[in-house]
Image 1 (cartoon, one colour):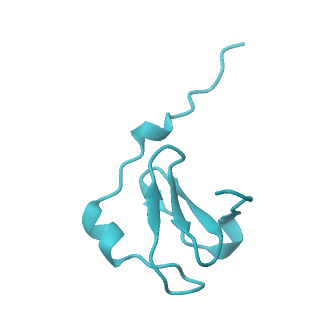
Image 2 (tube, rainbow, N blue to C red):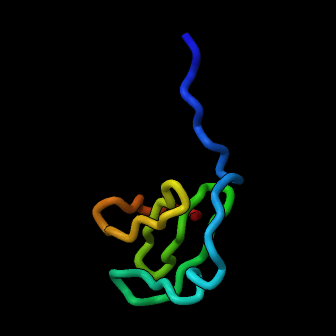
Length: 70
């Protein structure tokens, strides 16, 4: 059975101007773009917000908690 296409993380692009204005909805702090994982990282909240189809999903309930060392 063929596997569904899973886009490579490198396929994720975010407009740099958008990255300049987005902030973490929990802490209102800055976000880092992790191109390899296709996520926006809030170090202060220890959350990673996914990017789906080029759209950042900025809902805390959809964010992944960062593990130790991330």
